[in-house]
Length: 146
Image (cartoon, rainbow, N blue to C red):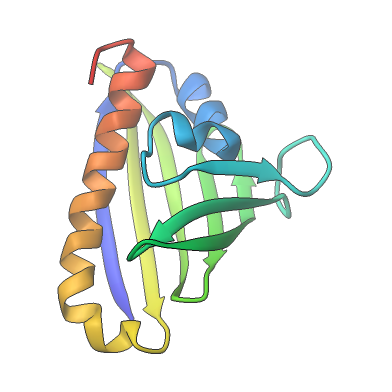
């Protein structure tokens, strides 16, 4: 198991950032790795909500199921993500900051199959990718060009 953690400050109110991130259907707007995401449970979004998102790994399509295991609007969002290559569980926290919202992420990634062998190489890439994804979110919500 590997740990990925970081934080970013976004110049928007906590409620705005939380609500946007909690709707996984928005993720393709700031994460170029996600081609599509759909809600598979009924609204409203909350604990137990599930989404299916689609990405590709090494050129092959990959489906992921995301389930919210904790939902404390607008402070905390916990989830599990299940894919054929890895399982991830973790939490996003959102707190007011003088500059807007301080968002912190903490993920435990458990690679599966061959990915276990590649973990020493892939986890540093995953950390870098997480920073990039959240920087894209910041640019998107702040209305800045990428």
